[in-house]
Length: 458
Image (tube, rainbow, N blue to C red):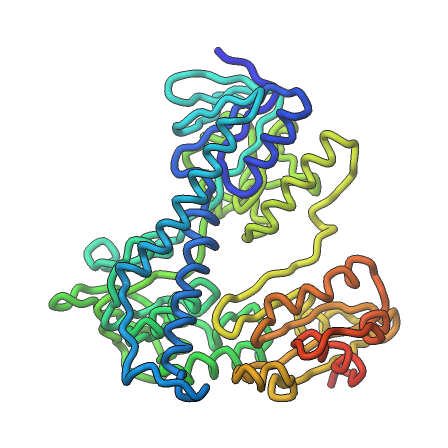
């Protein structure tokens, strides 16, 4: 039996950095990885999808070349073999870099295999038992495959198996009108697929405000992406080399037939094989590990970081989990998960950048709310770039003057929204942002203008 000060299970965004910090502090560290190093972000998530989004953006620009006074031929030919090869090279470089980094760390032993708890201090891997004073779980998540009739007979894709696609599907049906599904839907439409999005809710990305959902729908519809709302997917069926999706819907055809189906209906944690019960680590009904504000589990020497704890579903939240744990353990800090602001993006084109409260949440907070809105058509940089779709919105507490939240849907929105983050963490009044001078011509320079046009929320 090998003894360690810390055992880290998984090499997503939290695990490797935590391993480095603990090892630098003189601890003996074991880190276990069952698959590819780097977790979802590097292998199946951010890195490959944003690489594909970049290729799709180039395809779209070429399709619009005449609008900019250019001639690029009558059609754009997408070579998906080369698109995939570019993506694969970037992914492989990232994964290999993480593995090389971990194997080079002093005081650190890397194990390649499946980890399973024997008790709260002991983990088995490859027939060997490892004991640790503390154990950190960073196992991430995977796409949900719903238990639909026919799902075992009809071919389907997930966000992971989409990484293997080296062709342009003739007709891609995307089941799920949220973040992952919409990014894939738009990119493959730009690559040349006919795309239909099937969403069971009454609008796309249902966690967003209705005006954001509607604008996203308009953006996608403008690229001839078919959208079926209030349509629950109830079964899959093979149909002469294609796939038929049966729908429970109040209007529209009860079936949609395409060449390929992408199931993008959510994610679930990779916790089922860990034997958490042996360590007395509690999970919720969906398998997410319950943690407190410091990311400790019900077994106080065991911590859960990243997607598997249900406290965030992003690379940046996973990395922040590492920062919280490292600061608390090594520097006596008292950082908490609840201290961070919700911030994320939807990487369609143009992207949506979101921070803080939605308008719906602000309405329900009991505060007096001021709101500022501005269409992208008023932004000079957007007009100059020929990218005027979308709008900006900011929410302010009328009494404290603090910024409560913002949504920027438009060119550069994923970057511009972050210009509000420091003011929000610092609890500065919106006037501190409004009175600052910003570079012209940029999208961000219109944020102070928008703040100068605040009005009570109707």
